[in-house]
Image 1 (cartoon, rainbow, N blue to C red):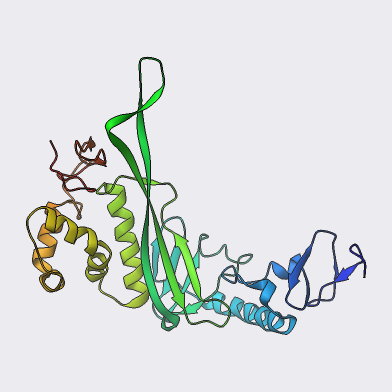
Image 2 (tube, helix red, strand yellow):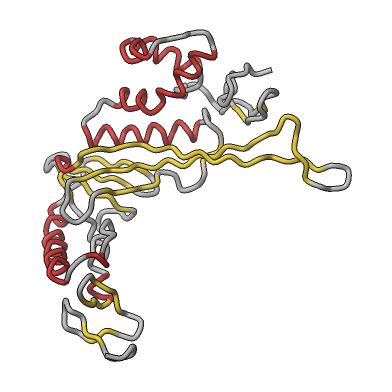
Length: 279
């Protein structure tokens, strides 16, 4: 067969357009059939024709599950986690209920969740000043702007895919300890707790544990890891003192300042990078 010979879809039998072929492990698939694949399935090229037919049958049956799905809890902002507490099922989608016909998001059982983690990715960019000639030069010490991305990774026991990734924030979050930072950290912990049944407070401590212990050492608390897990009330009090919990009565986030030791940009009383007190 030549490069431009006509191809037919091994799923539906229809002729495949010139640019519409989607390769399978042992055959071809048209773009219309490919559009029906689960958005969480990533190994189409390693899927056989027989398995793909089974997958699309599963996707067709999912439509009936979706019609019966009635969310009792919605979490998230950019992409949302919808939970039907009565049926013990959940859906992940960037669309709202009633607009799912074309997307057909997978309806999964809460019992299928094997793990759920909140990952906070940090990005650091140096801040420069202009000299008398208009050139960008470093501060001494160097100054940096820190931005953060908040992502949820859900591991599931499913034949067709192993995990679901969703980004919580639509835009980069600037600065640790800010209201926006706490907002997405809290949102991630709420999603984790809802999907796994883990208490929200413990989820928050697990995510912030390393940073909290670092600040404890820098500020003289010298708390041992086992005490960190056991003394919940003391944890919460110290978290509030160090800016990990946003107080409702605060009208605005603290003014930003640059650490005289390492140049990191901060909003709390101590440098989030090296622990130096605010001057």
